[in-house]
Length: 480
Image: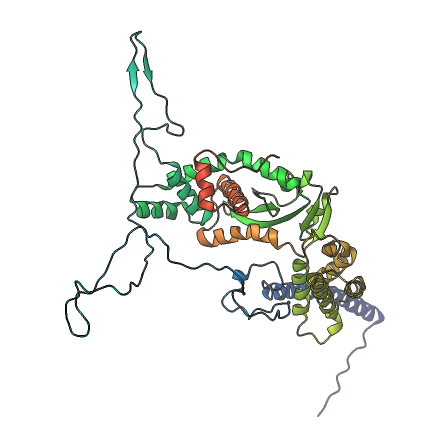
């Protein structure tokens, strides 16, 4: 038997309360949805940024090729085939070991018996001599020179002692050549102090401590104060100079190496700061009025007294990063502007390399580059990545004169590779011997590398330049 249960109808007040509860719940859910949407958007932006970082290589960013790892892809050059065979070109002088006309020692080897009949060959005539020369080092040994400071007693009762020779002021000390080799291994070949001391001890069979290497390096760097000021002045007076900066680990913290260079001079400084404050302390950019070639980092633009030329190799890497990021995208309109910009920049470089630039062809490629940049400024890509791409396009559009300055001023190069070469050794040093333990040591490294780079540009090899330095007569720029 079935009984119907009568459910009382809710009153108007109960329905009103239920509606209020439902509305409050809907508001809560909507608020939560908004928060979740914002969280998802942040996550999407973070994922996109991590994907961009993961896809960064030396081809599409400023990372060095060594950071690509063992699984790096085959290199893809943006330059076309030159038609030349790989290796040394015809007419290149080359370097190889060759026999000398007057060897230090001659050792004769004569056959005792005939290889045919076995007869003795003592009195047989010589018909030919084949020369074999072996280049080797003699046993290396330290030479000790003793300086006797004689004292003589005058009949007036005064004893007079001979003066110390220049640079000889201790009962026992290392000479300038062995000090130069210490500095050469430590600063020129990037060995650590300990490995430098060990190499010196084993090569020359004489005890050398880490402290000895450190003191020799410190003294050499101290003697380059005048050189640093002269190099800064020479670079500041140049018509065109290259500028760059790179991170450098000091005391476990990020510091910065700043480089300023010309074809004849280089000055590298180490500073805890990266921006204008550090650049001012280097005393080059505040006094420079020529054409500054750099990578479009904002602090360089704060120096209004100079003309700017931007690195095209750097902007090419940025454009390649745009195309690589969208390589799997089904929307080519998001990145095709970057491809057109790449093609235009390369075409303009080829025009410049071929000789006098045809103004009409230059105007055509320049217009294509401008149109590509304008399209890039409106790409509808959300998040930080889209903002970066649009900022890149705006920079190309706004500073096209600085990017193409090499087409109007023959003194200006297409890229800033000269500056990058000056600071590349810092990365090599960190890979070989790790970071610097003190800021003082980092500054010693910077000034000694400046000296070695500058002397190399003047045709002086590193060890010879360091011997000049450790003898108290460092190479200096001409003042005229």
